[in-house]
Length: 200
Image (cartoon, rainbow, N blue to C red; front, side, top):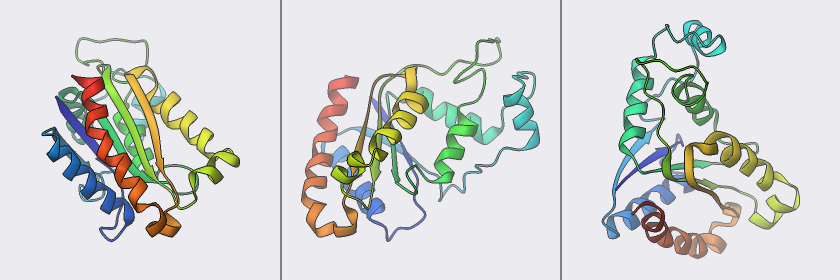
């Protein structure tokens, strides 16, 4: 069993980075194999070139898939579980992660009805988890409808039918970290067993 973590935050001083360290520790405790795509450390390019747009926008499968995108495809194909770890910025993931979806979920691979012998379709993974940190408490995010809208976009659209099991966990209330740190740690502590449940 292998887990691919798509991590997106520019600062190692952030609460999200602390969550990443805890997540790694818990996965190690459960003896689970994982790899991390740290989009900022990788300097992952998130803007499409004109050629990429022509490939995606016109479903021109004759145009090449860029090398860095193919590398992400390989990581996905080796994984049983994808974890997307990111902060909530303006009610969504950071633009760098949005750009990862724009480019990595390429036509012919992650969507589209056309098939070709040269492009392998994205496999259906056993478990997908959107794990995000948020300044506002979860109750407030649910009350104003933001939690539901984030879930609709991330779970129903971006993860979609590409995963057999999928969920979103919002680690909210980080404006008062001392108040939520323990409850967040308990959630992270349970993730290894949850992954095993879906992926073994």
